[in-house]
Amino acid sequence: MFDMGDMGKMLQGFEENAQKLKEELASKTFSVKSGGGMIELTLNGNGEVIDLNIDDELLEDKDSLQILLIGAINDANKMVQQNQQQSALGMLGGMGGINPFGGMK
Image 1: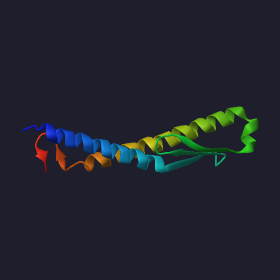
Image 2: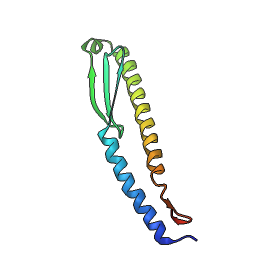
Image 3: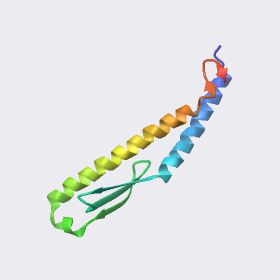
Image 4: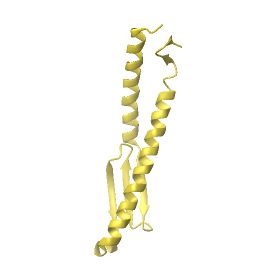
């Protein structure tokens, strides 16, 4: 039978795990290089840009700079999204001891 006390425990567990996940993601970094290293971009696990290096040669070639920067941003975002999905699935897997429809396992 469904117990509201178990629901409260489940929600509290989700909140705690979500906070841990957020902190864990913020501490991770993902770096990509584009154009043979002419662009180097680093994001944290929350998808925030924390570092960007652009080779001086690109500053005179706006079209190449834009293309390489877009590629680096897209690649870094894919890495971050994949990590977030894996981390979220891991968090849900860690919640295996709580079953909202049958109490604690």
